[in-house]
Amino acid sequence: MSKYVKFTSERVNGELTPFDGFAELNAYRRKLRELRLIGVDSVGIGFGNLSMRDGATKNFYITGSATAGIAELKPADCAKVVAYDFERNWIGYEGSTVPSSESLTHAAIYESDATVAAVIHCHDSGLWSVILNQALMRLFSVTDVRSKKTLAMAGHEGGVVTFGKDLEEAFTVLMDARKESAPCVNDTFRKRNPA
Image 1: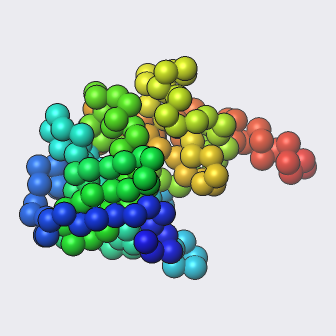
Image 2: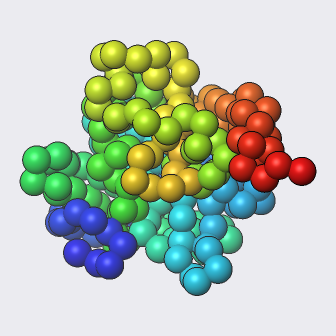
Image 3: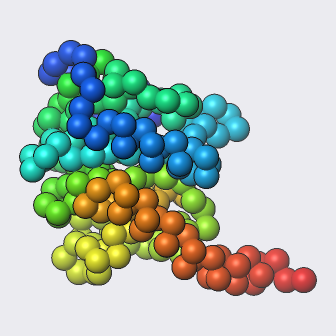
């Protein structure tokens, strides 16, 4: 277990070859990097990741740990999560790169809704402050997260997750949520910093 990856993992197979959707994953990742929603912070720590479900299975492809600073990913910069155990905090994966530290969050979303085929985890402090105070697994049964497709990661300041039937929908949900949260963020800022 590394300093940033907060689960145990077991590599069950070697290198990944290009997979269906790899070019799409890179394209949306590029957009998120341009918006500075994925990248590397001022002290060199990477943030943000994307994943795509592997067909109708519970397996998914996810960007690797410590790859946020790479401009264009290669398949070797991704991992395929093929098994997970929430109670043991464990991931089984294929590929040469350790999966993102948020792999279990992505797994929980895929496990909770079979229609979800893509997940984006980015950092947007303004949006995060607006949608905070929701619990991940409970959200699907007691809130409208299934239709909103957006949640905040408590204890992970700035961390926001969106999801959808594909990366296009997950990205659109993120952009719409950022637009909708702008008045709330501006009001909060004005209250904290009166003129």
